[in-house]
Image (cartoon, rainbow, N blue to C red; front, side, top):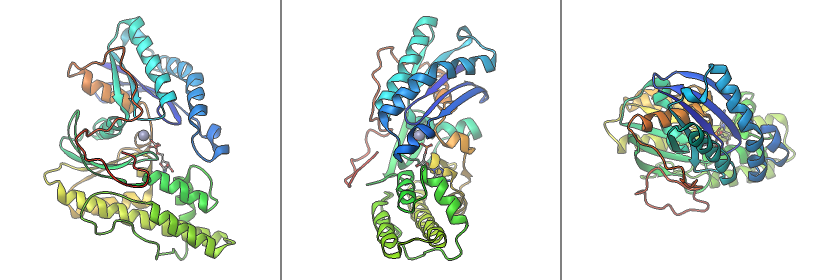
Length: 346
Ligand code: KG4
Ligand code: ZN
């Protein structure tokens, strides 16, 4: 089975061809970083226009690279939410058009399920596993019980982890995207600031919060202005350590709350953070679980995980109707209780 995957829910336009033997036959990705950089974050309308401009040629290039025609496909899968609706509509419409013209099945993929199943593409992880999803838009802990069966253990009550990195980088004058910039600056730290708060530490639930840490950092930045490069490095390292300790504590809770898991899987752009990866490996080992961290290109937004999610569903005979309406909000666990917080994103 060969499926074309399309991703366009945020600031990455991507297409990939994946087969059911877990091989990525070809993939193309256009990162819109330069388009959004002047604004210090993703501008939805700019993103939608860039997806529209780039997606067609990107799909063509992917097909050419693999030496395949649309007739060779067994299905087309596209991110249909959650995400920035303009971009999602571009990807879904393109997928539906290819499916309709070439009489192929279409599958509307939940982007979060794409992240959740990326470790099955990279490492063939067996169900059930514990998933930490930490990206710019999402921050949650889930039990992946089976395809289409998810139980949310906790999520952020305010900012997502990546969003916190991006805001912290802005405060420190480190530019966008913030995560890689903070990591780079932190590497030079001689004396990390260790007295920033560790949000939620010791709390019995598995939720996250980062807004208090961000406020503490802002106050510290204001008190220490003008910032020398050394101070920026020490604050960046302090921030990274505080996030890492907070996340590791939440994961420790989740491991205790969900016995019988085969692995701790981490996904999403923040999973690229070296300090966090190291700490999660320790946390997983203490809980007698292997840590599965897919390669960074599969952790950040990509189309291979979307194609793979399509394969997992199409293999079960599940398809989506061609009038499937994109969903800007689309939780994986419909039964999860609503969270109350400043700017809840689930
Ligand atoms: O998964 P992703 O590419 O896009 C979303 O779906 O959000 O994640 C992007 C996020 C950004 O907030 C970025 O700052 C963060 O992941 N990020 C990192 C690192 N690399 C990317 N955060 C911390 N450390 C990194 N090395
Ligand atoms: Zn994502």
